[in-house]
Amino acid sequence: MPVNRPQPDRHRLRSALNRVLNCRPLWRGALVLSLLAIAFLATTANPYPVPSAPSDKINHLIAFAELTILTRLAWPELGARWFVPGLLLFGLSIELVQATLPYRDFSLADLAADAAGIAIGLLPWPGVRKARASDLRRSPESL
Image (cartoon, rainbow, N blue to C red; front, top):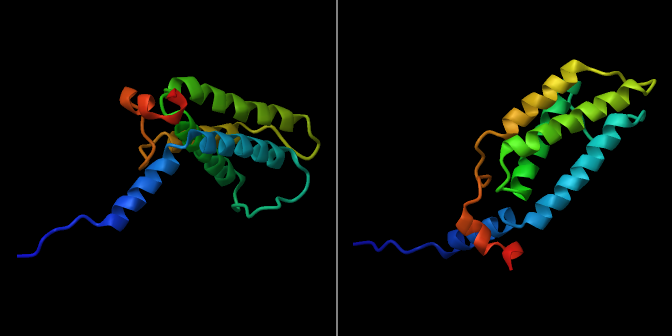
């Protein structure tokens, strides 16, 4: 009769993945860099130095989904009612700055794409979950 043995490689991989997912300073740094990069790309007159979707709305959707996921990883205990308004305000501030630039325009459709990206980022994703009290007690920041 075959014996089911635990697979050590699978356990190590899961453990390493959990360490990365729980490394809040990493996600907070990534969030700051993303905010800076998005602000730069939204206000530059130069062609994008990175690959871009053919539709500007797709770029907005992807950017704000990414910002939402990074926020959830950086602060898993934070409810959406606290960070969604901040992300929407970031999108609005970009549009207000673009309204003053001769090579950009204010767009309500861009804000709608930002909101859609946030909604996608709020969907349940593997590894992104609300922190439980026991998780917070075990986190490196609780020391």
